[in-house]
Structures are given as structure tokens and as C-alpha cells.
Length: 574
Image 1 (cartoon, rainbow, N blue to C red):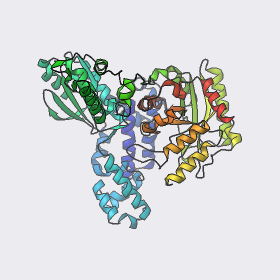
Image 2: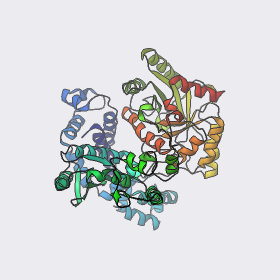
Image 3: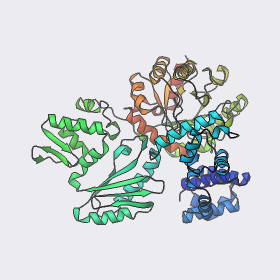
Image 4: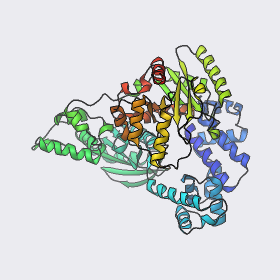
């Protein structure tokens, strides 16, 4: 196990202990250990081997032994025992927003509710409304969130799927009889969530059985669903399925294109081929009876009189017309990013210090870090009051004096209050170089109220960036209703940037509105909203969303230098 997987096990243990009603100190010890492990900037195996893990505050001897066992063996007897003691349906309830471990314990032990289905039945019968600690409003919210959970069942975040898919491609690529291997489908198009993983590999026909045997036996595959010579499917422990198709290498490019494109894109491509006297399918591209050479996707598009269409754009949203006219944009790349905007530190609810976050950014080749800890309204996140703001700004000045060639920019993630006012007065906001305005409370407004609330906040001249515009949490919480066009129009008029929050649970602004914003000349910020060093790498998911929104580097604030970014904010204030 790596540190991310170990932290996940410790978190799950804490949840299960709390559901059982175990000692609160024991629960907190596992929560703290998970947080510490996630935030480590040094090699975990080296810490364990040297015994230095025990020197970290919050990691005692017993916890160090658990971490060591997970690192070496990939499992822990105590973890398995907890899972066996609690019905699986009870654990699934933790995915329902508004249901914490304490309420789940009441449902399980007092009402003998042991599954999602039992819970829905109890809600529809009005039984929860009669329970102490619940009530009719809570019951209605749980029922609403249950419907969302059922809707999202069987879907996975892009981050979960990419981690598995990239490992599979690497492992398959190591097989001596595999010529080429890629993942395809909605995952290659960069969709926020996926149902499964589509894999494509080319191999000599006589070697297919051996490759399929190898695929079915790869580590991590918990179940082989089906196995054939041309197609096999395995399922992983988290429920995600991966299907591998094998083709000859001369069929690889057309098959990859077919398996990648959205249905509407593929239909439009086939129609274009017919209009040009050709036929295109997953097997190849034909002119009459002649099968045209197609060594790669670039050649396939060229046969159709099109420039290469990047996978992220294959949604049939005008990409074919743009490719025909030679007007597809040069999409943003990770290498275009010059700095990290919207990160948190130990000053609020982050895991790492500002210096640690800055050094991690510098190690990744970036030139600046925008620290945006929470404001005082976010008391749950240890938000900063005016006094602590002053202390933090002094620390940033000291760090900037010491980090040659790198800069930490002063910022705040300031809460938008219910009436659209900001959590700090203008005098306090003037001390920051950038201000990110976000909503973290009162999600129950209607579309008109929520839209007016945001636009009111954008009118404050100190607001540089609108953070996660809808507050959505993918696969768990719908965003509050917002008139996206109205908000984007206001941002365009006022010169405010809008964030693509790159946290894979958010990816908000939705990519479907990104092109509209760019067409209105709204600068987009791709923000990891990182609360720990590892969170910085979430920038990749934000870049995928930016690419799906047709963005170039020139349209993204992170591609500015620190000085250009400050000038952007200053222009807004003037």
C-alpha cells in the first residue's frame, strides 16, 4: 500500500469505530494518523525503516505498527475485524450527505436498519421523523440524498478511474507480446465521472490468449467477470470494472478512435465519411473496397479532411466544424502552468505549513504559490480572524525573503455571506494581493437568490476570483442552483476570474460552461484547492476540464507570471 491507501484504511477504521461507539480518543487517534500520513512530504517506507515514524507527533507505537503492517502486507487484521462486525449496508450509509457515524449508529442499533433499502423504506414510512435527533426535515433530506446516491451508484470519480487505468496500461505495456496499449472511453475524454474503464491493446493474433491470461491475473483484480480471446473484463475491490479489447496493430488507431468518442461524435464522423464516399468503423477506414492505411488517429482525421481532434473535445460540440476550418485551439497543457492558485495551510484547515507547500511547488517547477486560507466565518475550518491574518502575512513576508526565485502570494478564501457581502471589510481585504470569494453555507437558496448573492459578491472590487461557483460535490451533493450565464456575464463585465476547482470531487465550474466563459473573455483559474502537498497534483484534473472547455494557456490565470497575476488583481481593484 502507498500512503494514500494507508490513510484511507485509517479513516475507514475511524468511521467504523465511531459507528460502533468505541472510545473517542481511539477514533481521534486514527483520524489524526490518517491526516499525518496524507500530509507527509518524505518517503513513508524510509520513515518506517529508520524508526523515525515514531518521532512524529501523533504517531504512537501501536499506530506505527499498524502503518508498518499496511505498508508491508497490504492489510490489517483489526481493519478486517471491524468490517466483519458491521454490516456492509451500514457502512454504505456513510456516503449519504447529512448522515454521520453517530446517526448511523442510531439507525443500526436502535432501529435495526442495515441497508440503504431499509433506510429508504423507513423514511417513506415516516419512522425517522419520530426519532430523537432526526425530525421530519432531516428525514426529507435523507430521502432526497438517497435518490442521489442511487442515481450515482456504479459511477466513479475520474481520479479513482485514472489511477487504476494508468497502472493497467503500464502493466499491459510490459507484456512482451503487447505492441500498443491505451485506455479509451469517457475516461480518455476526461469526463468527471465514469462507469468503467475501456482498455485497448494491439497484439499478434496468436498471442491473444496469453495476453488475456496475463490481464486476468494482474494484481488488484478482485474478480474476473468474463474472459475471452478478444475481450475480457475484471473487477477491482472498489467495484470498478475494466474491459480489455485486443486487436491487430493495423486496427489499433480506428478502434481507439471509436472507443474514445462520445456516441454523437462517432455518428457525426461516420456521416462525414459517407459524404466523402468513405466508410469508417472500429475496424478501419475504407474507400470503396480499399482499406486505407491508418497507423494513428492523426491519419484517420486527415483522411476525412480534418485536423487532429483531441480526445477531450470529442463530444460533438462543434469540434468537427472547427477541425475542418483549421480553427481548433492549442489546448492548455500541464507544462503551461506557472503557479498554484487557491491552496490551504495549517493556518486554517490544511495539513502542511506554507513553507512546505511552497517548497513542494518549487520542486514541481512552479514559480509561485497563492495561499488562500479560510476567513473567520468558516469556524469549522479554523478560519482566520483579522489578528491571525496579520500574523500570517508576516510569515509570508519572511518566507519570501528566504525563498530565492519563488514567491508566495497573499490571498484569502473569503466567505460570501447570505446577503452577498464578504466576510471581511475592505480594509482587511486590501492587505491581500488576491481574494477568492466562495460560498460555504446556506445552500438552500433558490436559483434567483443564489445567483443574486454571487453577483452581489462579485461587485466588491477586491474580489479577484469566484471559487467553486456551485458548491457541488460529485457523486454526493448537487450544487446549489445558479444561473451560470448570468454569473459569467457579470464576471465578464466586472473583470473577475472564475475558478475551475480541480479537486476531483468538485471540478466546478462545470466544463460545459467553460467555453461560454472563455468566449466572454472571462479569465479562468485552475485551482487545486489543495489542503495538503499531495493535493497540488489535483491540478491535472482541472486541466482536463479546461481542455474539455477548449481553453488555451492564454485564457488561464495560472499561466501568468506572479507579477502578471498581481496586475490582474490590481486592475480589477481600480
